[in-house]
Length: 336
Image (cartoon, rainbow, N blue to C red; front, top):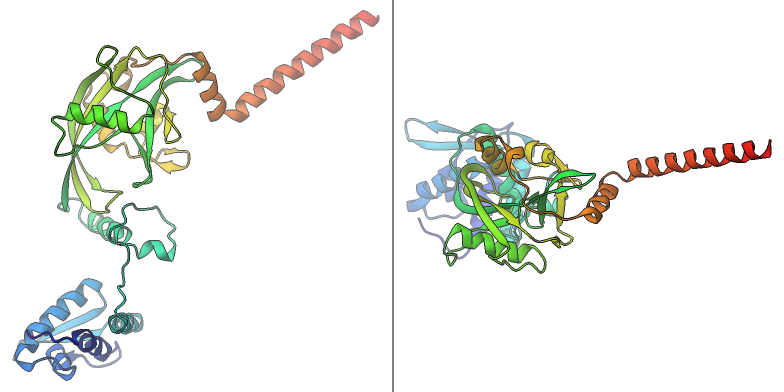
């Protein structure tokens, strides 16, 4: 196959000359020769072009058995316009997809500039591949460490710390990828705690990390978009600390956020597939785990006010109304 410096122009001519859905199909090799490709390598060129166009689903192909030549045409008016649009991109030298280095995906609805970001388009393609084949092979591997931090708050009950991941745009347990220079999953857990929790410095005299287990989860990466096999090791933090600054990215959630696959935290989705698989393997489940931290009464009321503001306001107004009523009754009794 001979590729000249003006190959983008030649490829643009091929795309523009693909017959529409209301026309007869044409030889892909013939289209490549007519566009100026070397006749001696036209067959290989045609096969490469057809192979790529098949990925778009925009063409129909038939094979002429006598010659083995592939004949193609667009399968709809929109498909024909799509091929012409691709030709225009080739001529301008402008890439169809932008920002291949940008990580992170978003949930629908999408803005035009979001769909054409590399990681977002990959996410949509991989979501479809996974929907078509629930056993679709992963494109990448990842070793993850996550840390369960729980407390019992007065008035609010048990709560579990989750951190908002800005790249993935999801809430998840504190933790992250095991790096090559991490000596062990435990070392990863310590590093991640110190990176994600403000002013936290691991102190073995008061902090302890207990390994809860390891699970494997295959799901899409919300950072890169690709179907990924995650090997996840979980630890629980227990500590004598009386306070823990979680910062603006941290949020204390109820057990439903870990157990309900459709749960939202502050309007954001939650990545807890690995946690749910771990919990299913724990004797006694989630509630059997010991409380790791004791954070005090003030934190409890603050969290309750944040989560159930209207309920708290209702109780306060109810009490105020009762007080007013009692005062009026006492005043009336005194005036008689």
